[in-house]
Each structure stands twice: as structure tokens, then as C-alpha cells.
Length: 173
Image (cartoon, rainbow, N blue to C red; front, top):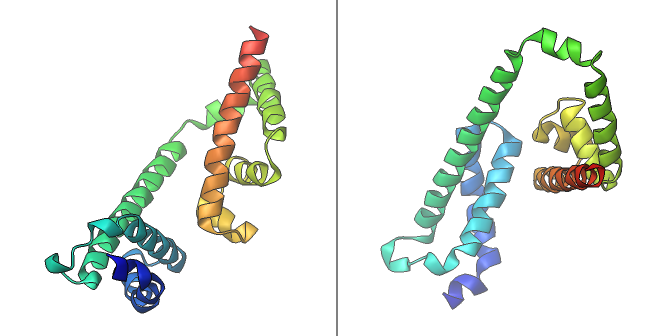
């Protein structure tokens, strides 16, 4: 265990190419493969106490983590595609009528004010996601931020937005 911890940077240098190659081959997208590589090494670091040299080599253990992480990434990709397809099937009239609905206009104002209370990066990510309809990967490309940073800003921004809207609702009541 101590040896594994002491040599971590060397293990990363030695095996990152293998992990990236497997992820790239399975996912086809270099950015997704980079994200998976980062996730694999983070998971390996967190789970390093579970590595048992008598059960197999470090490379085999890392490949197992890689396979599970790639499977998770593919499942997430499938879920996003299904959500996109479901959104495309929504009736267009519903979107068109939202512009003339006074309550929808009020909702837009309330949400806009709540968005203004977020940090600039959170605002940027959420506006790109919801007003420009960009995926998190696309937002990362547009902003130049790592995908993990975009995901963090999105998650924290949505949590703060939810809390802000709840507070506004409680004040109104």
C-alpha cells in the first residue's frame, strides 16, 4: 500500500496512455476520453486501499476501473440522447404559446432575477445551457474551461437557483 501511494505519479505517467487509449477507442471522442481518464485515476486514488496485488496486476485493476467508467459514460451519453429526442417530440405549439402567456412572462422575469444572483461563471454556464441549448461538452469548448469545471458550475448554479427561487416563493407567501 505505501509503495502504491509513494509511486502514484509514476503509475499515472506509466498507465495514463493505456487508460486514455481504451477510453478513446470505446467512446470515439478525445475530450470524453480525457474526462474518463481523469475519472479513472481519481477513482483509483480514492479506492487505492482496495487494490490487492495478490489478486492481479495494477494494470488489470486499472483496466477494470476504466471499463466501468467507460460504461457509465456511454450510459450517460445514451440518457442525454434519449432526453434530447424526447424534447424534440414536444409539441411546438406549447413553446409558441409560452410567449403570449402572462404567467410564463412573469416566470421568465423571476428566473432571470434569480440567475442574476449567481456567480458570473454559474450564470454563463446556465445561460449557455438553457438559452443557447448547448451541452456541457460544448460549453467547455466555448468557455475553454475543463468539462469538470463546467459540470460543477452547472450543478452548483442549479442548486443556488433552486434555493433562490424557494426563498422568493417563501417571501411571497
